[in-house]
Image (cartoon, rainbow, N blue to C red; front, side, top):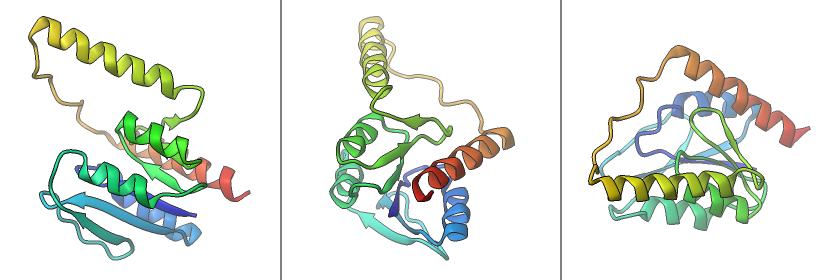
Length: 148
């Protein structure tokens, strides 16, 4: 098992590394040339800039039973299709049971924004310590369910 992180602007990299180190699981952080990272624990793979370049590289690397950390529903769907596990930065697990609904909601939201002419959204709410605790607990639970 290996953990792959869609690390462009990922707010939970340090938590992923902390938990992975506890369980001695390899981590690869994938980012584009605009988000160069350094890590004391993880392998960092810098992918050339380009629309979805990091996403496709991540999916090409991940295998069955790996874990993918991403906020992108499309990446999560492709990871699930390969038999990998996927988790959102919020701690929500992507599953075969919820991914179609999430993709549909994303599609409908995009369609509504296009129809209204509003293309610029407010960014996500400021991340709190509680958000980090929720992700930590959920991520650790996911790993324990896999290794048990």
